[in-house]
Image 1 (cartoon, rainbow, N blue to C red):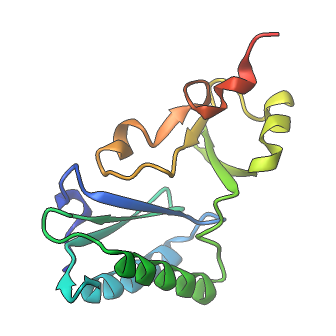
Image 2 (cartoon, rainbow, N blue to C red; image 1 turned 30 degrees about the horizontal axis):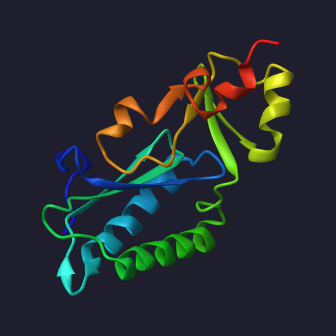
Length: 163
């Protein structure tokens, strides 16, 4: 059962899939249809899931499930990941690469491989004011307060210790 993302409760469970590139409007519209088609049939133990999808910044797909209705199971989550792998093949993009860390500076969103973050801080590409996307959040309520945060308030703060 597909619902509008805004109609999910704040406690809804979420998964964030980060594209390795900015998506154009045509890609977003096409992928939105694919997602909705998948979510219409998505079930856990033959029970419908109350789910929603939303694309943020033309780059991040956020899937939400109202687990007060029915809980997502391991098998249903596996189906979701397999669906995402199909999207990757269809659209020739990466959505599952967790080694790329996303940042926002002014209105620009960029990614840096995990192993290059310390160097990016040393060269000033990432500053105290740069914002980082925390794609490990698991509840809808965290999208507003904990998803996007200043680097100095994130796990990267250790790189800014005064010498």
